[in-house]
Length: 199
Length: 199
Image (cartoon, rainbow over all chains, first blue to last red; front, side, top):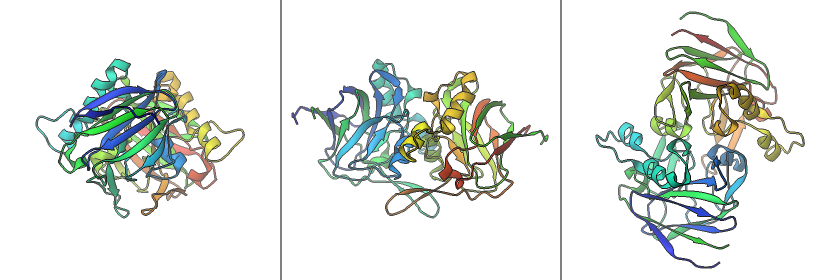
């Protein structure tokens, strides 16, 4: 693989960029215990987007890792997880938002969250807030009580420098954040690093 | 409540209708062990749609039942579960589709599934296939292995005549099916009944 520059997403912010079919996207947790909400769209038709419901159904597993495919709403492969040094991510929850902070955290002046950060980053691609689906929440550690089905958001299992590598299976627009929700990152808001390289 | 006619959704088909704020929607499993995929849209702006990711996050539970609220992608309440005689439904998987039958079942001539049935039923409301999200899958019994996270679709726990009542929290377009996937209904394709009444 051709090594390229590592980019940094500052704490509580987001970015968007294109990824060509065959390129690799490496998502790195530089300090450990941070989450990155990742969404993907077909670069040539952004009405096609990453679908947790399709992906979980086809994998027949709630937790996706190396070898698993993230499918679109049209059941086309978008990203394959090539390597995964952590093995624990979430694919059930939407990005945190002003409403998350209002409803769950009771904040008076809620942060715009990953939702707001993704909206700003994706706007140049013509993607609006209503088109932001359940994200593949890299490193997010969601535990479900097998008896009560209660959801607990726990500190990520990622250690400093650990990474996940995805391969693009079509030309994509990617949106990514350094997560803004305290619960997701043990209340220490940190950056996320990423790298794009040829396959 | 004002009683109204009971409508039948024939096996492997779907329907769509409007529901006014405050009206009640009763979903009935007339023969037992059948699933109904339910999606909802703001009747005045169909870009606002039912969101599993928001609803599960706010409930902090994977399994929703009496008293729980189904939220929209904009974090507004759409439907409240008023009574629930079964207590086991799914809110993680997308409607079965041609691709489901192709990828999971290996069918040569796959049925269009709940996805295709919803697409046809929702077309008169200007809602396209790309806008069909993860459904609230009434009576669908999805078991997740707490160790491996493996998903198993088991026969519904619903017995003949059991029902769930939802209250509309805004004016809605509802799409509903009698599920087409064998796994969901123990390979006995049955109808679903529903009733709309004033609150």
